[in-house]
Picture (cartoon, rainbow, N blue to C red):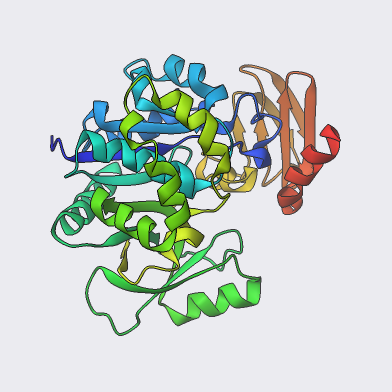
Length: 352
């Protein structure tokens, strides 16, 4: 394997739309959401390690998840886990990890990937990643992988690329926020929009140059600790200074400002597994489009539901269509799938 290849695996999210299975204490990336025998972070680590040396995969997460990662990924060493003392969105943690990687290997090229997405056809994923690495090693390029839209989905951001660009890797015109349905439909009809999967590829030189140009204050803040990185002085510096970083995403901080951004339309199936409905799409289903994880079910006049319980729990459903039914410890959720985006707000209400 190429020793210059690195990965930053993003594993700090909470996944509140998957409540009650996903909680702040035990978020969705540490669950076997698909009933496959592997958690989402285990599947993602395995997929990345097909092209990247295992020791070159850094895992970005909140410090409260450190023990969960060591338990689920026993091949990972403590110094591969990059701990955030405070949640500051994706730009600060990517800059922090990139500086650590630069100190290890100034010739590094890296992929930044979420830990909780579903990807089918891993051979194509590896092929797309290899192609992106090849370009980023040759040129000062900030790359992303875009997903060919299958519907006017309002839950994803979009990437607009140059319609006149006949190359397979396209010049990005702009990133677009999550649209309303009418706008999403127009994007689809235009045929030069892709879903933003949040997968980025670049050389360590290119991304640090971009941070220095577009986020000079943040760059200066983290550079002050450069000598401490990858040493026993690192933790003290990060604990004191990390909370001072701006709370900003990599999209806003860098990708929407840089002019050297390109996108490769991905050739693999992808799902961000952001909601129970998106999980329903990817699970096996019965003749009435019901998806079941772990439960033993007796279903009558029931269709389009997703049902998840502890292993072997008996569940009887009659007369429900398009519902989420989740039983977890002391909580039972029975909720219309059409209103699944509201689950996050309900969790907030319960806490207040």
